[in-house]
Length: 260
Image (cartoon, rainbow, N blue to C red; front, side, top):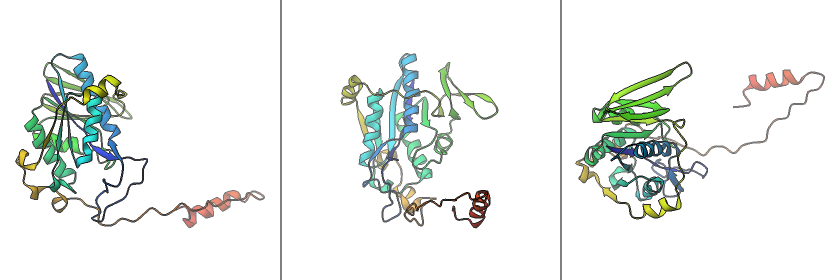
């Protein structure tokens, strides 16, 4: 069985994140890393490989040169190979265009199962797995807290506020997993050294048979039209409770909207 895990290189949430002149995320001026939520997807794929025979795990990313760092991390965790879709025409591509590119890359790579994180930690939309499944024409099971594969089926367990649901889909399929699916492993020294010898292929849009006019900022269905820095945090307002007047002062503060 071949598993493809979709991973994303995202700006470090603990660093200052800014927009470039064209109002796309400035990825060159910000340190990046493998999206934390995608680490859970890598972990679930590796668990399936640990439990099964003849299971191959390939990690797939779409992004600029620095996105190789996301592949490197996943390879250090234990994935066997990587694919990097790299093309200048991809700059500014939104989730709709990204799903098109990923679908073409999955078809080229060949897969029985695609595993995604529940969302990216930068865009936080959570819709890409469903879009990818639709473009591939495969069944999709999302928000898995538990994932198992057997006898040509993928079975997930999903929990919400009121129920625990079990969903079974035929392979090939697309599955997304949550941060409750199991703690992601930390790369060992052996894994770090082994990752240096693992194959990473680089494909461009021509390799995937895609038209550059269908991706990129000009083809995006969604884009940022305006942005401004977050205002500096001001000093708080102290309410002195004199003779029981504190509650009334707080109420006046809320009605005046001075907390906004």
